[in-house]
Image (tube, rainbow, N blue to C red; front, side, top):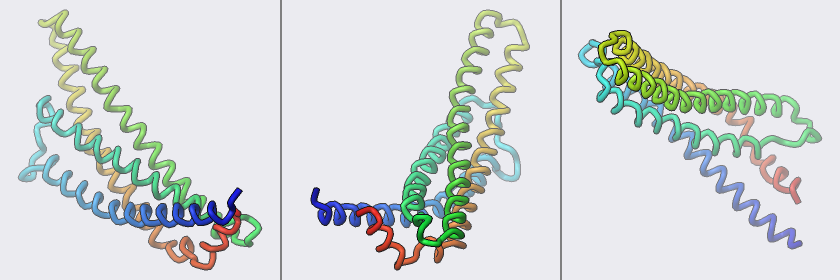
Length: 199
C-alpha cells in the first residue's frame, strides 16, 4: 500500500470537495435570488393572483419548481460531504466545534429530507388528478368531479408557492449558519491534521 500516494490523492479530493462546497454556497445565494424573482413574476402579476385553476399554466410551473428542488438537493450534498470531512476527531478536544458542525449537518439533513418529500408530492398530485379525470370520463355529468379537479389544481398551485417560499428560507438559513460559523469550520491548522489522521 503506497501511503504517500493515497495521501496525495486524498488531499486532491479534499481540495476538490472544498472548491465544490465554496461554489455551492455562492450558487445557493444566486438560487435564493432566482426563487424570489420567480415567486414575484410567476405567482403575482399586477398585484393579482395568477389564475391557479388553469391546468396549462399550472403545468408550466411544475417543471421549474421541480428543478429548483432537485438542484437544491444536489447542492446540499456537496456541502454535507465537505462539512462531514471537516469534523475533527473527538480526541482533538474540539467538543464545541463538533457539536456546532453536527447541529448544522442535522439542520441541512432535515431541509433535504423535506425537499425529497416535496418531490414526492408531484407524483401524488399527478396520480390524484389522473384518478379524478378517470372518474370524470366515466361520469361526465357529475359536477363533483369537475370541482374535485379544480380543487386539486388550486391546492397544488398554493403548494408550489409554499414549496418555493420554504426552499428560499432553507437556503438563507444554510447561508446564515455557514457564514456565522465560517471561522470555526475552516481552521487551516486543522485541515492538515485532519488529513494526517487518515494515514
